[in-house]
Length: 355
Ligand code: ADP
Ligand code: MG
Image (cartoon, rainbow, N blue to C red; front, side):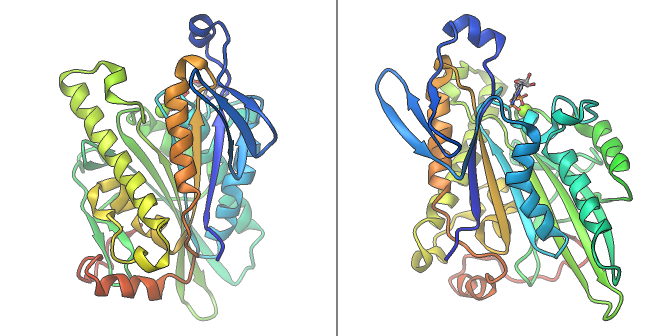
């Protein structure tokens, strides 16, 4: 069985501060486009990923490898999720948005604007018997509460599940976008709301309506800009910041635990997957567990001064690489899971957003 998760590592260039602090000393050296050597005071080890992007890599390379296959599938009605993981300052938001969402330098545009462009491109060349509609939603998870970034008054969105075991965000705002420029305008007005203390989730839904049999299918691309993965102790946090850090670490370990449980193989997979341990894993349940393609971008600093956080990010990625699930054939397994009480009682939430 093919794994449906693609795991990549990306090393950004050294920052000015790192150049100063570590005198340009770096903790990784490239072997090839899939492997690198990580080195710290204790150890030296080789790691392999599906792809490794080094500092000179282009935003277009990351998009083409990681996101384009997901975009192509979304317009056929298959879901896909792209997750960026890493410590604060590692390049997650740069990878997702670019230096800014309305970045004028085309080369620096991030995954999100490229995904939007890509969806419209695919639709343009698709067959004419299908009518396509693209919708956008944006939420953040802050302190285990889901907030609608397109309507900040909705600050406690509930996560539900329909009878097809699809995850729904109850009452979330959706805007229909008719061209890439319109999408970016909508995104840019809300963009500065997101912070590195929250998980930011962008949902692009493609609705496919066949002119011949009037059946409606949906394909989604979910982009997740995770909160910083750095350890609480290192930040020297107190009070509110400490609480935030603990909540972030808890949800990231929940994500790690779900990934671990999924690597245990099909026999144990159905009954022990703790999707419900955090809002993040709950929202990503159908993305990680079955009917979806997933890409994980592990963003890292190359600096020796950040070696321990870089190693922890690399290890997270290595664990994720073992996920085995096949898109589109997850129904039988879902039913099996339900028998074991792992999935909530069925509920028809057809008016809710399907995630
Ligand atoms: P994070 O979202 O992980 O906290 P950012 O994406 O905000 O980190 O990146 C931190 C800084 O590093 C930003 O100034 C960003 O522009 C820069 N940066 C990150 N990745 C790259 C890259 N691949 N090339 C150039 N600059 C980058
Ligand atoms: Mg960020």
